[in-house]
Amino acid sequence: MAQAKLIESLDKFLDVLEKSRLFTPEQVKKFRADLAGSDRQPLDIARKLVKNRKLSKWQASQLLAGFHRFRQGQYVLRDQLGKNALGGLFLAHDEKRGQLVVLRSLSKSAQANKEALTAFVALSERAIGLEHEHVARVLEVRCDDQHHALVSEYVKGPDLQSQILEDGPLAATQAVTYLQQAAEALAAAHKKQVIHGGLNPACFMVDGDGVLKITGWGLAPLCNTGNGYSAPEPSDNLPADVRGDVFSLGATLYFWLAGHAPFPDGSDGAPPDEK
Image 1 (cartoon, rainbow, N blue to C red):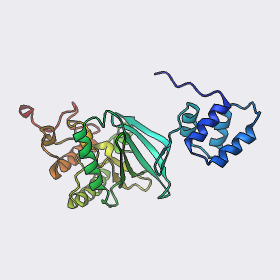
Image 2: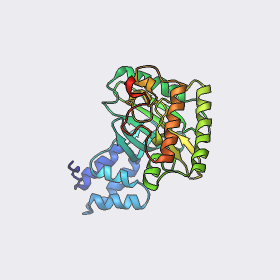
Image 3: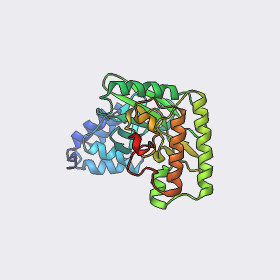
């Protein structure tokens, strides 16, 4: 895939900077006055703003490519953490709460199935009130006619899938510790009638203090079942329930200890004669 051509004109770069609303109109006006008649290149300006911590490296690269839509309501995008079929995953600053959050912006394809989208909104909104030490909290579901996004607590640390694929399986004692933390989180969720429905090793993150947190709440209706960790019932068009979460946690424990899924072909847990 070809990379976007970088802006070469200083005036055009300042126009994009103004549209981004990352700076006040007064600040942009001062930039224009200070740079009037200058032969400095947009790349030099962007590097200086990064050095002075006025922009993140990702913001600077996006501005240089002509992108200016960093604001989604009270959230200002600061970095892209990942991207998949569901859409982009961004680190954002929540200006109202004064904290970093994770914002998942759903792709058009993820929003195409209106029934699944309605289920996603309902499940995510139900999870908003879930408070537990081992739960990455759902903070908001943003919805309009054209765009949906899920805002969650930011957990600074690796997910266990990435960690294990790089470093190998967990020691049994560590796996048991994480299992207990995960079980406590799921028990609290199930007590409030909140089902995860999509547990897999990438949903488990460990913060800087070694505390496990479960992420991915609300996303299950948008995901394909049969990922190697799903119970057979959702694959048979039966609704996800507590038993499915318990099954998926057990399958994830297998991955933690063995380093691969219990059903590595991507199938669900149904016996062969039931498929």
